[in-house]
Each structure stands twice: as C-alpha cells, then as structure tokens.
Image (cartoon, rainbow, N blue to C red; front, side, top):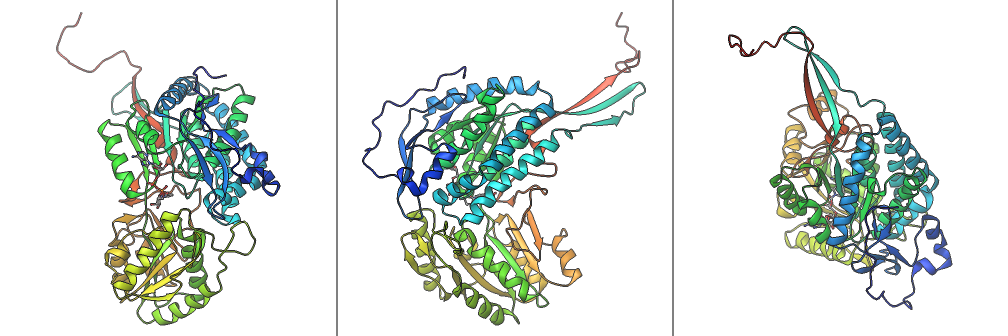
Length: 525
Ligand code: NAD
C-alpha cells in the first residue's frame, strides 16, 4: 500500500480495435512479465498515471505492441514524495538486509531472463542474444551489489592530535533520480538502482519514452519483491514519460543525485541545471569511439572485433566503434577483409536466430543514417560497402573511407552502423586522432607490442573513460566501473568504487581525551 495516491487517467484510451502484438498468441510470453494491452506507467507502491496514453511500436515490424499510460509532472511529485519517505526508512536499515532485498530482485530477474530479454529485442530492436545479455548484466550487478552490501567500509584515520581519532563514514544520500536512454532500456537502471539501494537510498526511474513497456516490466518485477517483503514502493519508483517529467526530476532539489544516461546535447543541459542547484551528478553521455590498429596488429582478432563492435545493436550502442584508425601500410588489407565480413552480415528480425543486425530504433534514426551517407558522399568519401536502407527501419552496415579524420561528420556521433576508416602514420598519430574528438567514452588499440600497450593505457595514451587493448570498444565488464571523460560527462556506474558516488562522506574527528587543545590562554570557566 502506498502512502501517496497516483491519479489514474480519465483520458479515452486509443481505439481498442487497433490490433496489438500483446493480443497475438505468438507474443503470449509478454504476459509472463505482466504486460497487458494497457499498462499503468507510474509506480510508487501503487500503480497509476494520468498522462498521455502512448503506444509502444516495435521497430522490428512497426506494429503496436501495447499501450502505456504515462505520468504527468503532478504524478512525478507523488512518486518523489514516496521515494523521499522510503529513503528515510531504508537509510536506517542495516546494509546486509538491503543486500538481501537486492539478491531477491536478482533472482526474479534470473527467472524472467528470457521473456524480459525478448521484450528488449521487441521494443528496442537489438538482437535476442544482446537483449538477453542486457538482462544478464542486470542479474550480474545485483549479485555484485549483494556482496557489496557487506563491504561498504569506511576507514579509521590516525589523528595528529593526542587522544583523538578520525573516522571516514559513508552514509546514503537520500533520493537518486535515474533517467535512461532507449538503447539500453534495462541495464543502466539496475547499475544505478542495485548499488544505490544497498547504500541505503531510494531510486526513481524515468526511462526513454520509446521503451516504456520495458520500464513497466522491470518495475513490476521489483514491485513483486518489494511487496513480498512489505517494503515501501518508493524504494524503486517509476515515472514513464518524456522530457517534461525528466525536466521536473532534474530541477527537483529532493533528488540528491541525478544519474543521467543519454546524448551529449541533452546531458549538457541536464548537467548545468543539476549543478545550478548544487545537486550531485552522474552523466553517461555520447561517444565517438575508435579502434586504432598498429602495423603489428593481429588481423585475425581485429576483423571480427570491428565487425561486432560496429555492426552489433545496429550501431546503437554508446560504445559502438565509429572510427577505425589504421596504420597506412595495413589500411587496404583491413578494408578488404572488413568488406568481405560485412557482406556476410545477416540483416533482419532480431528475434530470429542468425541475424546479426536488427533495425534502427526509430524512423528519425533512419533519416539520420541517410543524411550521414549523403554527407559522406558529398564530402568525397567512398562508400566501400552498404549505404542503403533495406526496408522499413533496416539499414545496411556501412564502411566509408577517404574522409578527413577531423571532418565534422567523422567527429560527431551518428547513432547508426556507419564506420569511418582513416589512415595514421604511427602510434603517436593514432593517439592524436583518437583523442581529437570532444567525446571521451571508449577507445581500443590492436597491437602486439608491449611498448604500445603500456603507452596506450598510460597518461599520454587514450583519453577516454574505457581504454581497451585487443578487445573492441564495447568490451566492458561490470567489475570495472564504467563512465566517460570529456563531453561524455563524468562519474562512474557499476563496479569497483562506484558505490561512493551514491553516498555522502562524513569525516568525523573524535576527541576521547580530557583536553580541548583550542583557544589556549582564555579562561572559559
Ligand atoms: P536522449 O538524450 O535523447 O534521451 C535520454 C533521456 O533523456 C530520455 O529518457 C529522454 O526522455 C530524457 N530527456 C530528454 N530531454 C530531457 C530534458 N530536457 N530533461 C531531462 N530528461 C530529458 O538520448 P537517446 O536518444 O535516448 O539515447 C542515445 C544517446 O545516449 C546516445 O548519444 C548514446 O551514446 C547515449 N548513451 C550513453 C550511454 C553511456 O553509458 N555513456 C549509454 C547509453 C546511451
């Protein structure tokens, strides 16, 4: 039972005669994760929503899947009030008890791995192994956070004063607002929620407006665990909606930390607003990731790595490889082998086995792909392979050569499977080209020389937050916290010491002597 009431919509629902995939027997698995024809999109212990009724359309076949009743700014206020209230109780709950709750959430995710992974594919468009892989990342971080709940250790610090000691204590912040992007509709919420929760915080989530069903399905699963444990729903609130509810969360001083995943453009606005109210921030923004290829690279490792990292998720990963910086003596051979590999890529329904490249998420993304291809051709670039729309939202993965490495087109993130290949003279040149973009998300080098490996990961090497060697730009693991540098934002999510961002640090000086060695020479009696 929630303390706070969310209004239910009184607006007429979209025509019932519209045929929804949720009613098609071949999608009956949607009911296993609680998806109905019309779904409430707001949760704070009870479900509701009084905003627009939106239809989630699958990029696979452009068919409506089901509908969601979004929240309004008024609904947001009720959700955040519930989260604030829940955070007070949770802060006083022992961390291992919090960890036990997160462990149960992880178990529920494990049980629903397949249908939730299928929903990610159906609603976002990534191939099923990647959809399931994304849910597995949520399972993995729940396991990690469960262990972490017994390791949130502070420090005892020796004092320079006699009869004194110092403690470093970590306490919860309160309410964590999480705004996420369409391309990872599951994992980023759990990277934030599981760790923030064991640290003693309450979270509230606004997912992307084009993947509302995934947000509803994940929250239903968490709500089941909350309700089974008689815990307040405000520990994991949901507000489905667009920029208006996102902006309300960004501006709200009740939200102690705002964790935002999305484009650099929106992230800059969000960052400035949160900063102006002195709120805490994690920004996980866009990337323009590159792989550098040295003359000594093992091409048998390189070619599959580039193919997966550039074509996978149809180029819609934040860590997709968008630039390939190849030693001038190898460039012809690398391009030849990549063309051959690209020609074998199967494009099609991401739920069908064998397809490597699914659709782009929206028709706007198809337009952005077409514009980038036209711009490349106008600038004198050569389309080595691809360059065409197949049908609907399906496009051909594309390789472009012959563009200057510092042209506007190469320097910006086009969220589509387009790879720009540029030559470099040597290691120093590769580092300079890698680092010249404004984003700083992920980079990788393929080399067999220890000298290059250690220079690459050193202070004078790649300047991105993820800095790989002999694996592609999207090869990150939860144990190492991810996050970017430069215009990719700042802050870290997931593993290692990321938990400290969801806490405030108190440095406590304790005087256990009988003296107060301050203001000597004054009689205070
Ligand atoms: P986007 O910036 O358009 O939207 C992200 C989220 O912000 C959505 O939930 C959206 O509704 C919300 N939003 C929009 N305007 C807002 C406002 N004024 N105030 C508050 N919230 C607002 O991004 P997208 O198109 O959904 O996602 C793709 C982008 O996200 C790419 O640039 C990609 O690189 C980036 N991304 C980064 C990471 C990372 O870990 N660094 C991960 C995934 C995606």
